[in-house]
Image (cartoon, rainbow, N blue to C red; front, side, top):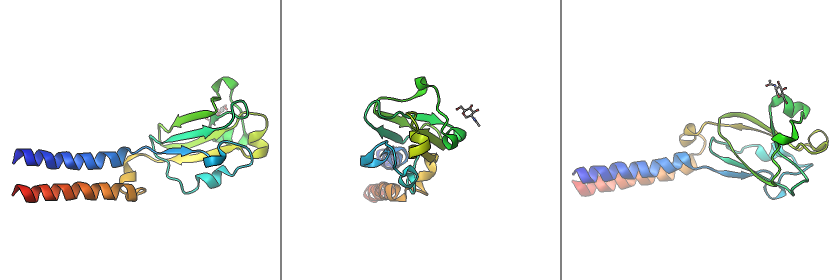
Length: 156
Ligand SMILES: *[C@@H]1O[C@H](CO)[C@@H](O)[C@H](O)[C@H]1NC(C)=O
């Protein structure tokens, strides 16, 4: 019986953990990438950003940069020193903590005049399981419970 019980626990853990740690990759601006004259607030609207998710900023090298700023920097397009800019053209930013995040382009007047700025709110990871991404979590939970029930039925 111990073996069966271990299997049940294993099955449950195996099916629950991936649902909690499923990191998503968001390509900012989708196929338009990181560019001028794009509505990044509309793009971000309704998206569920979670700790561990990744933002990808795609743009031609030299055309734009990515600067992580604070709320004031976002509103007023305050550029940080160029040394703090991401410039690879394929910048990936892991969302390491919950809260509000602001990104602007540090090139020319792209932020001021062309709206090249992004504001998102990152949620903690765990509540995603029960609240925001039930579509991801439920099938795996269901599968885990099913495996457990079948195993128990076989065991007794
Ligand atoms: C926001 O960042 C700027 C630098 O760009 C800094 O001078 C300012 O103190 C920061 N404001 C807050 C509220 O952290």
